Image 1 (cartoon, rainbow, N blue to C red):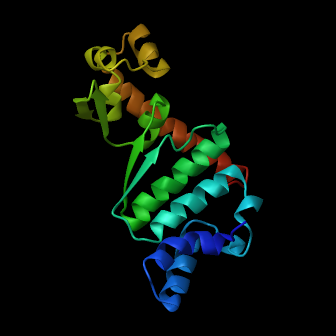
Image 2 (cartoon, rainbow, N blue to C red):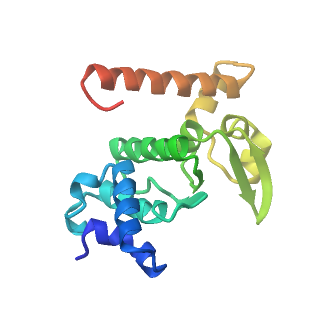
Length: 188
């Protein structure tokens, strides 16, 4: 089984990058991904979430402008889901890498994306803020998107601007979760 360092270095080796540059770039990337302490471990010794980070590190080391991820949180519990999404947000913020996600998870889209593009029958159906898209019945019906519970709640409560309610709810929910994690001594 390959070691984490070797797995992340593979793309650079294939591109005939010099050993010194490989060492520098891989170690820097492993630090960014929180994997540096494990660099000499076999990949098989890692958790599912850590293995996802190794996969992402293997691409990041190549200095991409964009990461395309298909269902990045599939099969993960809420804690791992938030860990991977917070990690991707960190990469986007600190490295300036655009992250394109393909997802069927509407809550993930609401919570973690500033912009969403919806395709239906191979055509562009919408390009807007997630909350606006998921508050527009014509778009959700055309693209067969599931209405979110937040949208349904806003409609049942007679809220005029469901998209604004959704944005505020998501913002406050994240803020409260982070405050609770900080109080409990967890990560923020």
